[in-house]
Length: 517
Image (cartoon, rainbow, N blue to C red):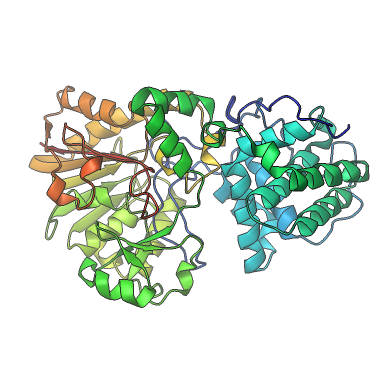
């Protein structure tokens, strides 16, 4: 293979086909474990058909699009039929390559890969953080990186040398996105292919990355990054729903790492905690810190004063209004951010979670927050379970495609498919009917999804009103959500988007509707 003397044909935009699929249900980021790495509902939060079973770690369909990576088997590092010389000690860049391969070739969620990749887990904390940043940056800007590489190669890297493709992507990301010194980015990439026993590609990797360093402006010229870095099926949907200008703004918001948002156990102390943490107090009461902040090291974390939760993910629980003394059911509850909000606000909460391991995680999080005595955790399928007595309120953060959370989960566009939307709407409809059956007359139901897809949000809310469930719309008012008047629809629904609050750092995409029975 030669380095192209002139820009070659453009690589197909990332997302022409989706490389794999995780469990289809997802949600916004909630809580954080003692390790300090932000956790989320995204990895395997719900399974289609049940609504809330964990499905992490399952390999999915191989990408047939621009990624061009064959499915890896059992995390194999070297090319098929060619053994690596020896197992080198793990490096951050080698771990990043394995994480990238897990998502793109094996269809595994990034969070799951981080938990299951020994080479990543053996790194020191600083190197783990860099490996995650490097892999996430590649996933976030994969379309752009592949287009640049296509301009530097006269033909794609062969399937027999699939790891070289990942090495090139990581090297290009270091040069174009992360500001790594060129000599370091090039030298470590060359070392990586040699460590893999692919010495024959060392010259190619060296030449391609040096050209990217020299000609970066020309190689990036004319590339429409927001569109190129968005899967085609999502781009078409967003343009049809929001118009091209807003679709572009949403896609542009996904190109930056999301800040760290915190929800306080006692919102009244917001100004005090903002000063203690040097954080921004958002109009809705969440605290915001820069991306990369180490939450476990913050004062107040160990004591349970706050938890990690995107500002948009914190809104649905607040839409139930004053819950003091009320019996509230939180469906699909793990990992527990919304459960914690309700309990801290004085509700008697029943948190329903089907997957035993996620229910245990929910209990652990509530224990750290000192809220376990206010919550009854029930391991059950929300579609079949019913309370002993009708509840005063139900919060349903339903399984969804989670396309509103891409800025926090850049692997998601490479794991989801257009077909997931249709399969999940049936699950959502069943859960809405179950939630309505749990309510007393006059009780409130808040339905929410962290999705930008119309069928999962407005379509589901409208269907609920016409399904004979005894639900009436309880419109959300602008005075309930300071600073978010733009996110309220004429119907009285809430629709946040990543493009909102650009000066403050954006927010996840969420839909919420409130009903009374």
